[in-house]
Image (cartoon, rainbow, N blue to C red):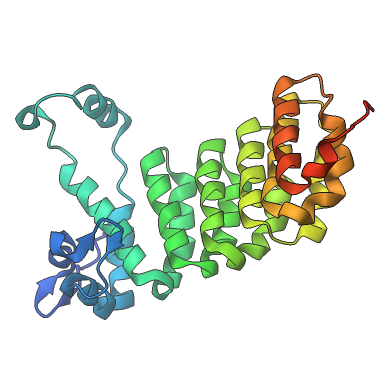
Length: 279
């Protein structure tokens, strides 16, 4: 009987003009303070390699140091350069390079979305999770269903990474509004805060979002009430239907809630601050 043993081999690193993908990503001339230079040779090389780079990039971005190695690196972080630990440095640099490459490829890398979501969800390393989430947003709107999976199915830290990036997609994030509104009911105050802030920054679907924020203001949690009031800010005049609730919040038992209500009314309907009677 012949037994065939499967061996998981690393993805072969693709080349462009005879040079490896890693060579093109290591060239500092490719990049500028705002991101990468579209005209740089390295950027052109990554785009030419295209989807053939995805298996290698997923392998690189999946790097996750062992808990012991991570603790050691944290302890030795402030040592002089020659004394800093070198173990894992190449892997960490490659993981960073993968994030850069996904930013360059953008929507061209949409086939990587399922695996990036899986890597984010299964990671015990917040750095890996954040790299994968950042890469999803570089891919663009096609990655939003994957982002929603992270927002609704994992622990708060990863959820916060994902929620805080949604506003980067602007009007392309309209499908995120129902997900963010659901987050206003979350058990974690930081998730509620991030969702309200993102809804304010997007200011999409006011006919749906403003009533939902008004309803969420009934929370018994003062911190949440303050966060939710902040959610009205970005809607400007479109949030005027919430003025009665905001006026009532001027007499809230929480100073933070009262301050937030004052600031939001000043922005959306300053005339509503005159002669307000207690509820």
